[in-house]
Image 1 (tube, helix red, strand yellow):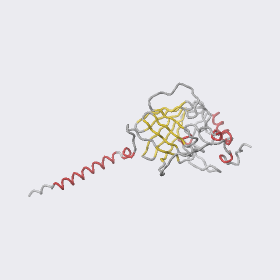
Image 2 (cartoon, one colour):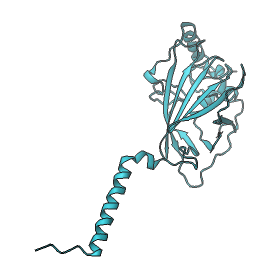
Image 3 (cartoon, one colour):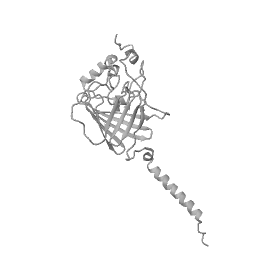
Image 4 (cartoon, helix red, strand yellow):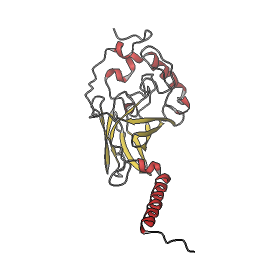
Amino acid sequence: MRAPFPSIVTVAALLSIVQGSAADAAGAQAPGTAAIPRTADGKPDLSGIWQVMNTANWDIQDHSAQKGVPGSQGVVEGNEIPYQPWALAKKKENYERRATLDPETKCYLPGVPRITYTPFPFQIIQKPNELTILYEYVHAVRYIYTNGNPHPPGPIDWWLGDSRGRWEGNTLIVDVIHFNDQTWFDRAGNFHSEALHLTERYALVDADHIDYAVTVEDPKVFTRPWNMSMILYRHKEKNIQLLDYECYSFDYQNLYPFPDVGAPK
């Protein structure tokens, strides 16, 4: 005896199950893709207010806690900065005299990449041919051009350099040149020359995290390129916005409260 032909209701239920399973399978094949917000032109959408959760502004390498400085693991790959011998000696001198030599104490712009990991939020506004980054720190503004135009001829003495970006898959690659030599990487005295060349990578891991990496090149100071990396976290607070932070020529004792580092008299 033949089995009864399935009813319309049964067939509909089976189709629903099959379609649901197919949808689940499709989602399972590309969970990262589904989780990444995208712009109208299909690029990962980096727009939002972001901030690091590390102490790289104090020291980009591993460091123990001390008065005024929280201990932390560093952000330098391998924890080694390949200084040329003369530059290593200069870095040590910078460290000993950091209370008066650190450009931050003079309210200079922190430079790139340091401005990314200062303890202040920043906002990315993304457009098809340009990303604008607004920093809470002294209202700094940076433009990353993605329209294919090359760097202007130089050399040019700029605090934040000139940034030209391109997309490789889901990663924004930013080439940055045209710096001055007046900024440091941190308060520990790590420095560079005007020949600094950076390659930044912004990869959206999911809706709320950017994997930020930067390759540092400077043939005048280092023996080879070296890398830093960290996570940028999206602010999710209600009504989050950038606030005002004005820098004044500092009470050095508050910024560098170390007994072994003399503040200006």
